[in-house]
Length: 78
Image 1 (spheres, helix red, strand yellow):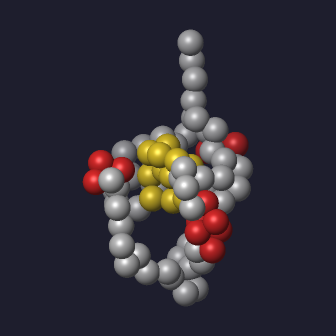
Image 2 (tube, rainbow, N blue to C red):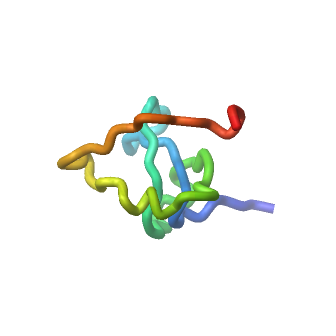
C-alpha cells in the first residue's frame, strides 16, 4: 500500500530548496492546505494542541517582524 501525508494545517516539515538533500535546520508549520507539497516534502510531525498559536505567528520568507522562540519543548521531554 502506498501512502503519503497531506500537507494541511498543523503539519510540521523540514524546509529545503528544490534540489534533494538540501534540508538542514529550517522547518515550516502549515497554516493552510498545499497539496503540491504532498510527495515532495517529508512531514516531521503535527500540531496536536495550540494550532491557534501557529495562526498568530508572523508569516513570510523571511517575516518582516520575526517571532522569537522563548521556550521549545519536544515530545520526548514531556
